[in-house]
Image (cartoon, rainbow over all chains, first blue to last red; front, side, top):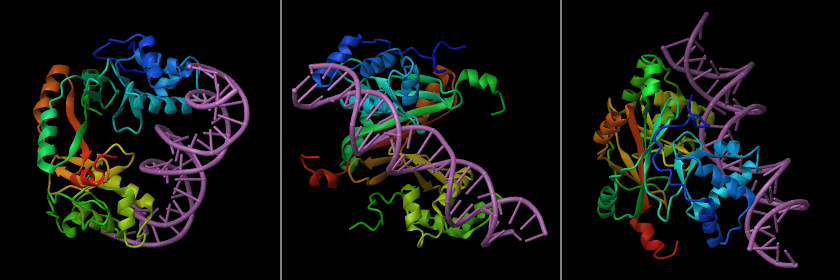
Length: 163
Length: 163
DNA sequence: CTATTTGCAAACGATTTGCAAAACA
DNA sequence: TGTTTTGCAAATCGTTTGCAAATAG
């Protein structure tokens, strides 16, 4: 069916995929050890243009390369170092995506409510809104969490009419 | 200081607060029984202009008026009937807000990362974006989840500099 | 009276944590 | 070698569910 191992596919937004050594370099700069589990996790993330759940990451690790707890711990570590960004699609599982380059290119997703197909949405028009809110309510360091949900073309065709 | 029992306060956006009988009427129309727990829960929600967690709702119920499981079940029921709307601030707990009138007035929130102060944001500029996305990617029934986070004025003053 | 709802306790899934052993630097 | 990290198992947290008793209509 689809080529993505977990049923995800869709927009190949940015497959820039910095080489592994560039990622591990960031670990080093953060005084973090370059362990096998970490390299394995980074490699899994490098293979995907979409955010992955812990379960998806762990399953794709060569035959349980490491314990789930280790994945959880490392996602925190990597998030802290700015190597990955956490997303929340409201389904109870956190999702993680590799951050490219220096800055996290702020973006959102369009997720199929039915098959979980994920499209990356690059544009974000909310910086101006954030400024307005900051001014209007005196808040500082404003950011936002935004995701879109809908039914993808395939699922519309399949479930035509019924749910 | 604030009158809200759980430390929340801020924008008293819409305290329209339809009378209880108007709410229970909706239950009746949905073929749902008007039980004590349900009335109690609706009354708690009626007292707040901001979304509440299950725990907050349960704690405010007169001396454990009902079991937490009952609150969970009822929030599903009420959500299904369109009486409440579910929000997700990404902190692991669902939040529920009473829906006013017939339609849920679509809105978002500005949440203080430090003290959880919640402001209601009425404007939403994303209908147009949803249409664009629908057209561009062939998705149907698009909606979105959007919340803003920041540091409120008080917390800025308090934690000035340090975190 | 009959279907719905509740309370209670057990089950669940995602995530976290304590601790001793294993692995990096 | 000294510190970080891992594996494993147990603990937590929010939420769901099975089932018999209580209750609304």
